[in-house]
Length: 344
Ligand SMILES: Cc1ncc(COP(=O)(O)O)c(C=O)c1O
Image 1 (cartoon, helix red, strand yellow):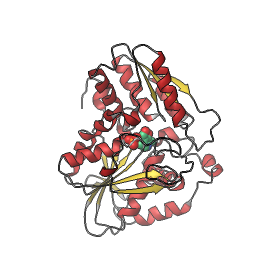
Image 2 (cartoon, protein in one colour):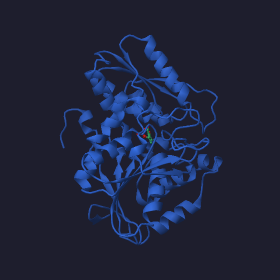
Image 3 (tube, rainbow, N blue to C red):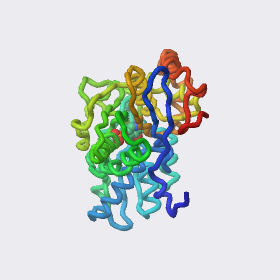
Image 4 (cartoon, rainbow, N blue to C red):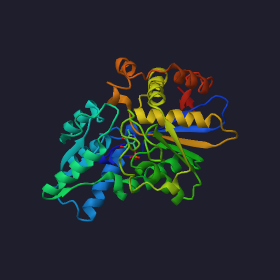
């Protein structure tokens, strides 16, 4: 493939087939880490900028300021670099050092808020307030506000959903993380728009309050909605059929299992989605096609999810998770995962 701009590489990410033991379902992981910025958020970052340019909220030479746990900011930093905007990311300690270094590498500036928060709490409210406040003090500034920006959700309707349909045809079930709700609700809208009757399952960290509950701190970064934060406007609950909770231990031990056994390095929230998806698909009777959206790669969580010391310190190591995965994935193709029809 030859492209003229890095932005033309956003989307069209590959699928990895997953074979479950004693289960006739065809299961595919959509590997969003293969976007240029390493996550699915490249799609919405580009669309939010394109829409703001169209409706005059962003003019040439302007500055984009956004609150982010890192992935949206990386997408915005890339698009800003290419389109000639300045970019300021407002982050808290949930943005890993790897993500912050990437934002800076693309020319973005960093503002850190939420000093004094424990490691498993997120300063979403401070982040959003600060990003809005900075944007109000600047000329030609644009605060995308991803949680309430419909261009976030719209970014996936004709991209991720269409790719899944082109690659898989009919899709019976999809599983995805939910934070702002943009990726899962947008994909669900796209599937419905194209006449698919796909069942949609949202996976949030245990402790996130999107589907109610008292809430409690969690380590999974970029996903869910913590206690006290308002529910993003772009979440449309009518598009979601089921919701599941993944613990940090389930999420992170799944990441470690897939890296060590199958050479697949995925991020923490993707690990949670993958574990809960496999756990529910393994019980299914009959046949069907399922797609699991894996938001980002593990390269940006090397100091946490993939660090033994950090995992032990936070009491997150759990051998039960890998034992379960080994059982659920046992037996097919030796390598258990195959690309297309060919075993690897
Ligand atoms: C790692 C990760 N997982 C999950 C999500 C949630 O995605 P969405 O905001 O589309 O619901 C995000 C969003 O930033 C993310 O960065």
